[in-house]
Each structure stands twice: as C-alpha cells, then as structure tokens.
Length: 79
Image (cartoon, rainbow, N blue to C red):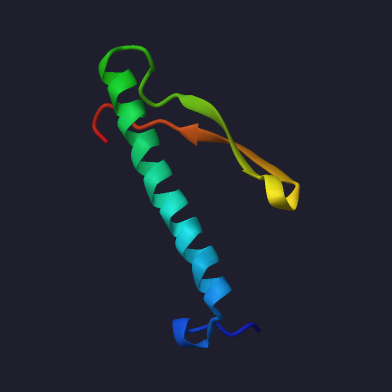
C-alpha cells in the first residue's frame, strides 16, 4: 500500500507539477462547463447527450505530445 505524501514531504519539483496539474484541471473544467451550458442554452447541444473530447499536452523541451480522449455526459435540463 502506498502512503500519500504530505506537501511537506514533497520536493519543489513535485509541488510545481501538482500546482500545474491542479490549475490545468480547474481552469479547463470551468471553461468546458461554461461552454457546454451556453451551447445547451442556445440549442446547439442536446441535454443528456454525449460529447467526445480530446485533450493534448505538449512540452517541446521534453518531446512530449500526450493525448487523452474520453466521452463527456452532458447535463440534463434539471442539472
């Protein structure tokens, strides 16, 4: 069983990775939610439908080009 690290046990680099990923997750979630709600309100997307999504992360200095794909379940009219 792995032990969860406390922030005080993390290196500066681990903390910076976590801060970046948290910021990425929070801000991306906010933007996606805002746009989905607008598109549903405008009738451009249907409530309770699905939306395919792909996220790309690119770090030139590392030669990293990482993609994650999934399907989002859109909220219903009462959500």
